Structure formats: structure tokens, C-alpha cells
Image 1 (cartoon, protein in one colour):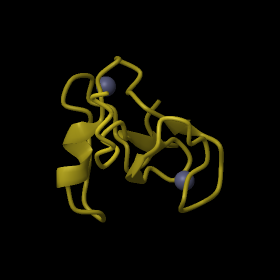
Image 2 (cartoon, helix red, strand yellow):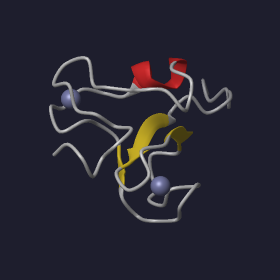
Image 3 (cartoon, protein in one colour):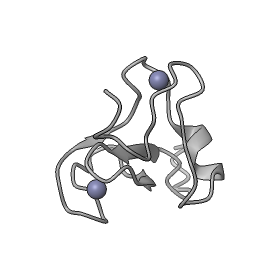
Image 4 (cartoon, helix red, strand yellow):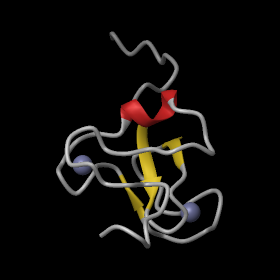
Length: 78
Ligand SMILES: [Zn+2]
Ligand SMILES: [Zn+2]
């Protein structure tokens, strides 16, 4: 009845732990569109969601505002 098929708003922001790229993905997506690794995470290690990251330009620094994780150099900070 009320099945108005609107544009899917169930997408989530995920980050690739390998290359540090943030993108909006389908919840079922597993592979990074940039590097192809299946290292996507829908939330930080502190459980914070990643919506904030889409507002940040690529190329600069990007840290989790809650736990301070440095997403731009995933190898450097653990
Ligand atoms: Zn990647
Ligand atoms: Zn965090």
C-alpha cells in the first residue's frame, strides 16, 4: 500500500581501511570502489558513524572527531 518506491535512502557511508577513501555505499557493499579491497567499514572503531567524512575534501587530513583516528594514514596510526 504505502510502498512508494522513493530513491533509496538506505545508503551508508563506509570507509576503506586500506586506502582511507570515504564513499556512500549500499549497505550490502563490501568492496572499496577505489582500491578493490574488501576492507570497508561502516563505522569507526569507536562506533561512530562516518557521515561527517563526506563533507571533508579528499587530500587533506581527516580524523575521527570522537577517537582521533587518522584515516588519511591508516598504516601510521593504529
Ligand atoms: Zn580502498
Ligand atoms: Zn573513531
